[in-house]
Image (tube, rainbow, N blue to C red; front, side):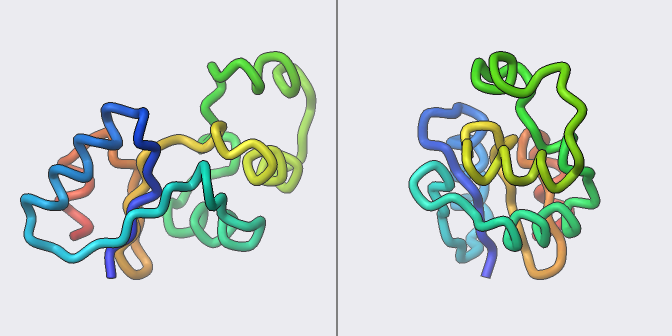
Length: 113
């Protein structure tokens, strides 16, 4: 089943849900701010996205700027930062089996569903 890591306050995330509804695909909504992925789940998600941890970070978020910006972090430390502060995770993320994409570009979502 398709999953979407969703933030209800994000317009791109809401648009992605509407797109999925229109596609007549069954999907599960994961409000990742309420139920953040574990370290291992996030690591697996990064592999499906084919991204490095830093590429999934919302680097303009206040908590990133105040706590992490300018620090030399290992990939595992970046993942831990996202697990502990899920607001840092780029959104929305759509997962379909072993494929995933950040849903800011609906054409990329279309390609994986």
